[in-house]
Length: 528
Image 1 (tube, rainbow, N blue to C red):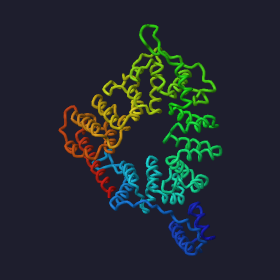
Image 2: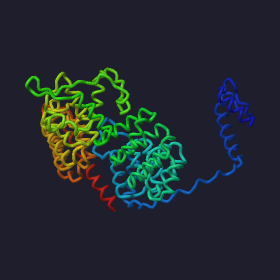
Image 3: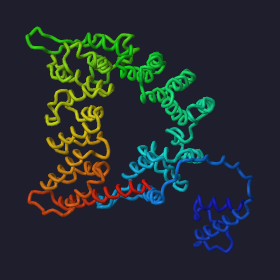
Image 4: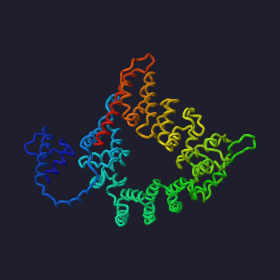
């Protein structure tokens, strides 16, 4: 040990200041002699170590009774997990090969839909992928199942899996009251969240009883997560529990409870909000023409605050407009036709609004339509897809349009966005495409392909369409590959085209076609 300490000291101070005491070492060879001696001492110390007592073996991994992946699908998973960490192509261009990292989320979702389990050998790479990308975690943890959670307990780098949603394979039968109670009292938070969702799907009242039994002892952040889980299957039977949560000591819990109650048009809170909002918004016929007039609240009293209104507005926002917006978005939309003389949502939205209150009022109606999932009001606020985006009847923001579109049936949503693209092109439609069901329905897929072809023929600046191309790779139906084949050819360069546009478009369409064909192959592999 003394000799080893001397070597360490010489290495730290430098051989010039502290030459190592090594027999036969010349002054000029001191650094090399020190390294040789350190290597010799390292081997000697390792060889002389005595084995310590063995640690306790971990509990055996639980069984996962789900079916294993077909062999081609297993190999594909290994390829996708390896490809997610591949280096980006040099020069900023992606090339014509599919982006495996972008296909991994779809592969995980498809595998989970068919009830497969992850192969044991792929679990470490799967957990590493989920650690690096939060968007992968829900689907990756479902595929990993109980063995993934077991493995995550052995590695601190995977502790995120113990906080997220656990795999359903670890959960007891919701009808087994004793097992459910034991896991609820003793399980990890991730397991308790998954258990609550499982019990709620089978017996909503039993799930509420679980919540009531420990609600007062839960941490505020945990109460918020449990409360958020009530969004799935929300019904009038939840009203009593949510009304009690309006008195919670956490402001975030109170706000979430109020939001959920306002999504129940028949709730007592919705009725209170309807009364308050109706007193602020009315019709004016004094000038001959019918118009909407607004008298925003002058105060935010205790009752309004208990019902979820936040009294202090964000910076730059007026108090009265802030309170008005919260009232209107929390009021049931069914109260407005009565308030406006039996008019339909389209007729109400078309009415002029006095004193520059239109933007505030319509924005609040948009939030209410999204919260209450009201397709009729969403259609009225969206207006015709051919109308200019900045002059629609209710909104101008594409983000608001995207949220409203999410309340429409899948086919209607696809037709609306297809018509919007035909009228305005792709540059305005990117956010709208993101809320459409995957794979895109035929009219929407055709509209996107036609718009890309028009941009290609016009020699448009190609890199501005890279985001849409990436969406198309993930969202177009694989059946569209044949239609796109003709677009992979290198087009003739036009005089006014962007330099290099032709080769970029050809490369992008080649990548799109190869990605769609790979997606079709993946689908076949998972089908066994």
